[in-house]
Amino acid sequence: MDVRKGMVGIAGALMNFAIVIPAHNEQNRIGAMLDSYISYFSEKKDLNTTFIIVLNGCIDNTLAVVSEREKNAILQIVDMPQAGKGLAIKCGFKQALETDADLIGFVDADMATQPRYFYELIRHIDDGIIASRYMQESQTFPPRPPVKEWGRRLVYQPLIWMLFGLRNYDYQCGAKLFKRSVIKKITPHLTVTQWAFDVELLYLCKLFGFSIKEFPTVWHDQADSKLKISSGFTMLKSLFDVRLKHSWFGKKTTGV
Image (cartoon, rainbow, N blue to C red; front, top):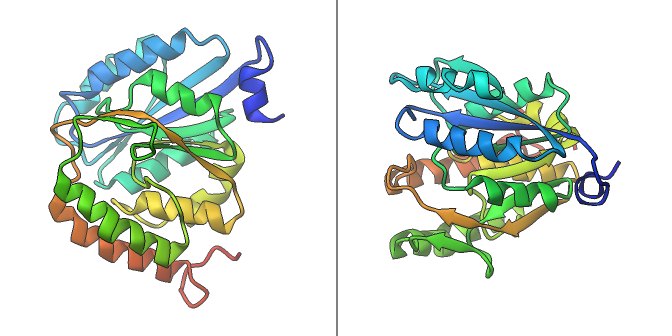
C-alpha cells in the first residue's frame, strides 16, 4: 500500500508510526516536548504511535523525566552510555524495526519542530521526507545569525553538492521520516556517530535509489542548541570521512 494514499486517502486507515527522540542531557526540555507530542499524536486516530527515547551519555535527570511519561503513551526507553546523536538515532532505528512500524522517523528533543509540523511530514511522505528550514515557504524563528547562514551557503552546502551530489536546501533539520523499507535497508550501513549523520543517511538513500522529498517547515530555534559554530570543523572532516567510507575504494561500502 502506498503510504501517502493510506494516510490521507483512506478513511479510518491505521498506520503504525515510530518516532525516535535522541536525548543528551535534556532534563529541562524533554518533559514539555514529550507532553506536547504525546497529546497531539494520541488524538490522531489514523496513527498508532510509539515513542522511542534514546538517552545517549546523559548525566542529568533526563531518564527520570522521561520515565514519568511511560503511563501516558507507548513509550520505549533506551539508555546508552555513549554520547553521539548519530549513534543514538541508529540505535533508535534498530529498536523501531523491532516494532510493527510502517513509518520510522526522528525528531530533536528541544521542540524546535512542533508536533503539527512533524505530522505534515507524515501526510506528504514519499520513500522518505525531510523537513527544511531554508525553502522559500519555510519559516524560522528567530532568523539564523548571518555567520551561520554564510557558512551554510558558501561552505557547507557547496561541499555536500560536490562530494555527494545531493541537492537539498537543508540537510540537518532534526525532523526526518522514512518508510520502514528505507530504514531497514540503510541502517546497517550507518557509521557516523555525531553531527554529519544526516548527510550520510541521505547519501545512503541516494545510493540505494530511494526518493526523498524535502518539505518546508516552521522551525523555532532553541537557545541551548547543542550544535555550536566550533563544531563546524569537525563536521567538515566528517563529510570527507563519509565520502571515503562509501566510495568504491573505501573499507565500508553499500555494495551498490
